[in-house]
Length: 425
Ligand SMILES: *Cc1c(COP(=O)(O)O)cnc(C)c1O
Image 1 (cartoon, rainbow, N blue to C red):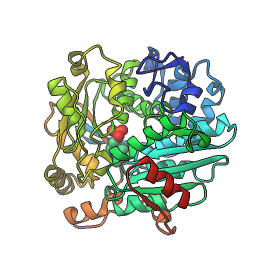
Image 2: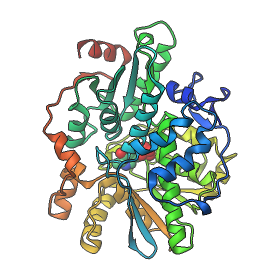
Image 3: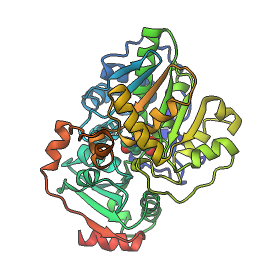
């Protein structure tokens, strides 16, 4: 299996695509073709065994292939339960990892891949975060030999607990509070990559990416869609649809990759917050990037989602895309009322991101629908507690992080300023 760039650069092996992150032509790596898996003979549990079987064709011929079992065992070492809300709705709980958001799945898998690839000289992981990626990547790569991690986060765009999680590592992890939005952080990463290809202070660092730019993060995310839909189909006899809280639409891309590989998935519905470029695109057929606005579901505050390139590369035109994918935007008021109602009517405490999926599910046909629960509500106490009347209990892994001291530097949203900030950190 080879991986080609969405902008045309020819196929290369998986491990090279993982090491490069972004393709040299500025595009994103995608599989050249999708395997047609017959999942009837697969068991969805245990997840790490299912993952190794599901991902084997994606690793075929690559030097990481012999390590795939070990990578899956180490990376997918926490539960991902599928819990039924009622006979036509279930929740896929992706937040039981070390930093309590679904980003742990991709970040841990990527870290295991890098550990197996070894390092020729210094390597620096430069990552932009809208709130959860940075913490997950920092946790996964903390103290990994030969690796530096630089996390860029929007100074006023993350919750206090998220900020703590981004800035509490030290050692090989540095955190930079950027005076701008997530899109600014993402742009800085792309600019640093471009600079690193010419002679510059960036070219010495051996830059690579751990954002959902990196194909090594998306592949393991396809796994939980495949196992959850298989599990649903084996118990209920029907193929479920998924409602996915979406921002940079990496998680939704992974769901589409699972569907293209033969997984029994009906429709895929993207729930966005008030940043509505993707719903607007699906309605009008015109993609118009916008400036991100701050919402309660901050990890989805994205105005120029980079993975749109990957989704477009799967379909010949927007009409074909509309057959498989719908999208709807949810306001902050609707997020608040959903968190309140889910608690009083179903006894569920939702994070603001998961609430967008819950809200959108209410507008959809009978189903069955699997709602993707992307983060623990305990990461967003300042939003959730006043709405449900009690503070959600933080999972033990989060509690442990809260005891660590924090450190970060600030930077204006330009590459020059970032270089200066890093020199001081
Ligand atoms: C990152 C994130 C999202 C959005 O996922 P994308 O892959 O960027 O679409 C949704 N919810 C939470 C909690 C997140 O951390």
